[in-house]
Image (cartoon, rainbow, N blue to C red; front, side, top):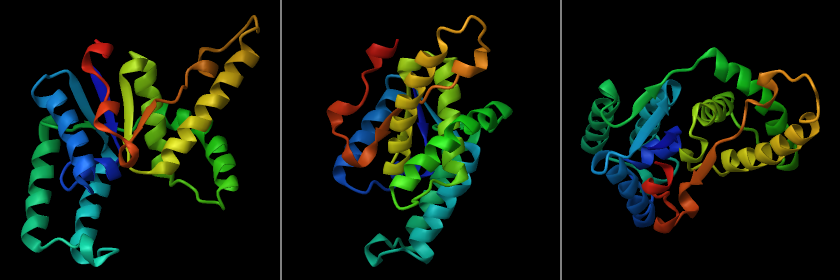
Amino acid sequence: MLRYLFDASAAAEIYRPRSPQVGKIIQHMIDQRTVLRRAAFFIPNFCIAEVFNTFARWHFDPPESRQKIEWAEYERMVRRFRLDVRWGRMLYTYDLSRYHIMAADEIIPIEHTVARRSERDHLSTYDILLIAMGCELHYIGPAQSVYLVTCDRRIQIVCEEFRKSDIHRVRRKVSRALEEPESTRWFPPNVLYLPSMKASDVPATGAAD
């Protein structure tokens, strides 16, 4: 079974896709979840509040006028989202734990390194914890079935850098006779960056069974 971990930016696309292409990709994932029943949707508990805030911003204070939604649509989206997170009907709430805090300690130095190269365009602490939650799902496994879904290119870049850094760290420590399990526990999840995806990029359910 595929495990998709949605951040707030990607979860909001379920209710209002930014483009027909993203809409097709999201619908394909939803079909995997609801029709085939071979995928699970996870969302961090703090991202639920972020999605509600995104909907409100689209109605009350959109960054661009074309993004504005009317009150009726706003109410409809809020009501549907509430139903989708209730009892995990569509999106299963993934609660923050001590393991995610521990994983964040591995990610923070990498995030700062990436931000320094990008005019200090930092991720938020919540974004770092999101990646950490993806690391924990990756650890629980099977690793090849776990995907972090986002519309934030910075998250994808940090995960890519983390993956390269992790390979170097493992190679450096693998020859040690005594090794703490935690030192090689945290691996970054696969990342699906919705704005650049094509329908063919959506993972096949059979490959993860």
